[in-house]
Image (cartoon, rainbow, N blue to C red; front, side, top):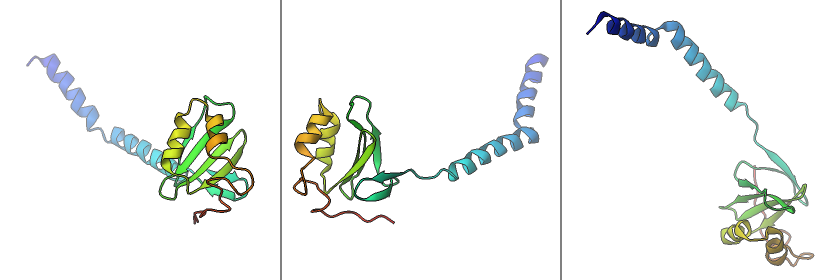
Length: 136
């Protein structure tokens, strides 16, 4: 091995074992971890319900609809939150299949109006006549 290769190899080992580099790396990792632990969960105000923490939900922002802005679904509880323009509404005991059909519909607004929305308390997933999940 030439002396140049040995010097380069020595530099690589020296910088990898440098205590200052190791401390800086650990400090960067700790800073990232501490920053992540202080991130607050997102809570939204739902019409006819009040604040709901989105932690148990899977949410999808919608960009292809002028009416539906976001859909959040808690599959184990079959509970959907939907943001229509600037307001969140909730729907209870809604099957995941219906939520998938909504998300894949050519017109989300038309699908919502025809299959989810009701008038009064007669909607197929109206929370006044279906079980509303309780969150802590």
